[in-house]
Amino acid sequence: MESRRNEAEFERFARTIRRWLRREAYDVCGDWHEADDLVQVALYQIYRNWSRLDRRDGLGAYARRVVVHSFISERRRKRWRHEVLALEAVETEQSAAPQVDVDVRVALLPALKRLGSRQRAVLTLRFLRDLSVEETARELGCATSTVTSQTVRALNTLRRDVEF
Image 1 (cartoon, rainbow, N blue to C red):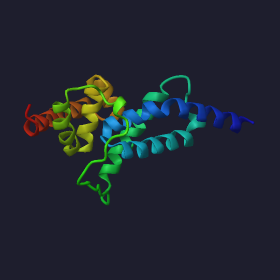
Image 2 (image 1 turned 90 degrees about the vertical axis):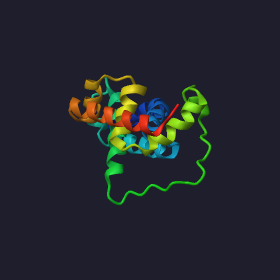
Image 3 (image 1 turned 180 degrees about the horizontal axis):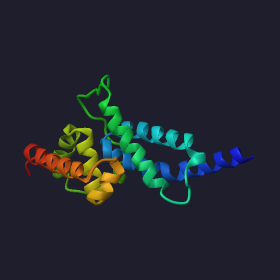
């Protein structure tokens, strides 16, 4: 009886958070298909730990943290290969994309994809999610000095690679 209730509770949680979590994952990785994979990994991890999690507060932040850590660890794997397509597929969720100047977006997205996974995660959390340095460090499980240095390096790389 208890396990059925837990499963029903998890299913409700997964249905309500999936869309938001997919957007969070996309902001980190820049690819809708990879975002779908990251969401699946996150939901699986949450399901495995469901009985031990405090479901009153903070599950969204925990889910985002799982997505970010999964993204970073995938990029660290030695055998990880990322196929680069000659033509990017048209993104299906145009309405979910932020409304920014098209020229800026066209120049910025490829430059963001060239950044390292940690730098991209730092920029996403700091500037898209508007987290402080301390909150970003907590999300990534690192020191605030690491967040600061990764932010500076990433912004310098973007400034060098993108001219407006």
